[in-house]
Length: 122
Image (cartoon, rainbow, N blue to C red):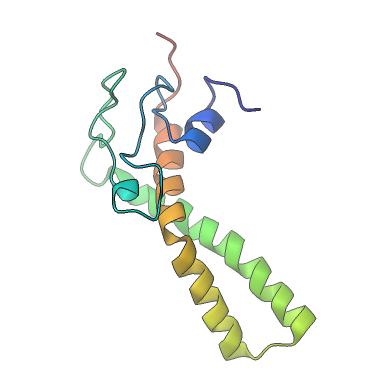
């Protein structure tokens, strides 16, 4: 089990990286409209989540890496085991990426802020 006070706890539970108490996103379900909206500040330690304009642009790199790490092995295995046409693999890859977009969005943002804000016990 991941213990409180670690970056992994913050990432997996979508909690504030500084106090590990306040929720990072308004909703729990990434596929609902509230699941993609972030709180402006932590309800517990008052950390401002959007630190500066363009802060989350770096999260796009993390999202890209997660998309490649998820899609490439699945498409490659389907190509080797099932001898599927190239256009079918392309559609499969796109379907996987589109289906995982909300999860990727949430994870990439929480991972990105954990690079810059570390746990500080109060």
